[in-house]
Length: 627
Ligand code: ADP
Image (cartoon, rainbow, N blue to C red):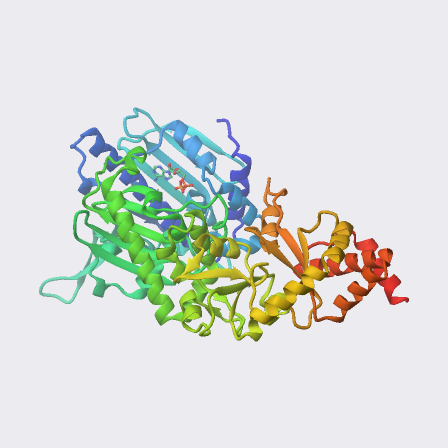
C-alpha cells in the first residue's frame, strides 16, 4: 500500500507532537473526546435538520476501551464519521485557520508551554502514541476506511470493515520512559480522573467498562463484575446550580475550552428570562491572546440552542470593543436552523447581544470600582480595544466606554479615570488638559507642560498612539473639552499678559517673516509666547492634527501626506528672544538664519520629531560653540 506524505506544515506540527517534551501530555484525551463530541453534535444536528427522527440523542455516546496487555487505548464514537476523502483531508492536513501562527510560535520546543492556547487537536494523539489507527464509517457511506500512521513518515488509508456509523481511534502507546509512564493511559482509574478533569460537561455519555466488586450475599467473599460506567456528569457547567459550582471548576472549564494557560480574570454567569431567555457563562481573560491585536483574531461566543452547539464563534453577540470576552450562550429560543446569513437580522440574537453588552459593561465597572488592581491589569491588556471602540464608533459609544478609560496623570503618573480627573479639577479650570509623548517621564519634561502644571492644573499624559485620537473623537467629557497643552489655542494668561504678548508679536512681525523665510514651509507660523517659563522654544500645532497625531498617521500606509500645521513658539522672556531681535536690527542675516535653524531643530527634538538636516545643524552648533 502506498504511503502518503503529510502536508509540510502538518508534518512540522506532528514532529513537535512526537518529540514533545510538553509535560501535560494527558490533554490528548480531552482533544480526542472533544472531536468525538463534535462528531456526535454534527450527526445529531444533521438528523434534526434532515427530519430524520430515527436517531435518538440518548443513543449517541463515546466509549473508552483501554487494553493493558496490548498497551492500547481506543476511543469510540457513533458520530458523523469520516469518508475516505475526509480522513485524508482532515487528518493529513492541519486545517486550522491559526495554523500559520501556530507554526511560527511552535518553531521550537521552548514554546511548548503555550501549546494549550491552540486547539492542537487530533495530532496530540502522537504525544502518547507511536502508532495511531482511525477506523471510520461516514454517515450515508457504504464503505468504511482505516487511516494508519506511525508518525512523521506518512500515513496509509485502506478499505476496512465496520458496520456502524462513527469513528474508532486506537492509540498504540509509546514505551515508558523515565519521565512518563504511558501505561497509566490504560488504567481505568486514570482515565476516569482525566474525563472528570477535562471533559465532565461533555453532553454525551463517556462510557467505560469498569470492574466493580460486590459482596456476596451471606458470605464475606466478593464477586468482581464488569459494568458500564458513565464517567462524566454530562451537565454543562452553565446549567448546574450556581452554588454547586466551585471557582476552580469555572477556571478549569475556561482554560480547557478556550485554550488559555491562565485562569480568567472574571467569570460572569447569568440567566435571563424574557423575550429571549438565555443562560450565559462569560469570561474576561487575564491576558490578551498572542494574536489579539491582529486580524487573525476572531471574536465571538459559542452559541448553543438547548444544549446543542450550533455555532462556535457567533460574532454578532459581541461588539468589537468587547471582543476579548470569551464564553458560551445557551438559549431555548434560538432555532437550531439559524444560519450565518440570517444572524444579523435575527431579533433574538440582537436582544441577547444588547443584554450581554450591558452585563460586560457592568462587570467591568464593578471591577474598576471594587478591585482596582485587577482592573488595571485588565486595562493593560485590553484598554487599547476600548479606545478603538470609541474611535471606530466616532464617539457614539461614549456612554458605554468613556468611564472605562484610564490615563496616567501629571500628579503621580498613576492611572486615573476621566471622572476622577473632573472631580478634582481646579475651580477656575475649564478644560481637560492632556499632553502626548512616549513616556510619562518624557512628557513631564515637555516645555508646554510646565506652565499648565504651574497653574495647578492636572494633565493627562497620553503615551499610546491611539490615545489622542480617542479623546478627539469624544470631543468632551462631562461638558469639559479636551485640550492638548501643545495646542496653539491654549492660552492661560490674563488680559494684561495677553496684551503684552500681542504687542511683542506685532513688533516682531518682520523678524518672524525673515525667520519663516529661512524655514521654508516647514512651519505654519512663528510667535513669541508666554506659555513657556524656563524653556526657550516649543512646537505647537494649529487645527485638528497635532504633532503626535502626525507621527501616528505618517506611519500608516497612505498617511504620509498628513501634516500638522506647526507653530514655532519662542519664549519672549528668554534671553534668546532679545538676541534674535538684536540680530535682526543689526541686519546680521547669516547669523539670524543659523539661529533660526538651530532653534527649530531644538523644538523638533523636544517633540520627538526628526531633524531634517542633522549634519548641518550639528555643524552650526559647533560653529556657535567655537565663537
Ligand atoms: P479541529 O477539531 O480543531 O478541527 P483536529 O485536528 O482535532 O482539529 O481534527 C481535524 C478534523 O478531523 C476535525 O475538524 C473533524 O472534521 C475531523 N475529526 C477528528 N476527529 C473526528 C471524529 N472522531 N469523528 C469525525 N470527525 C473527526
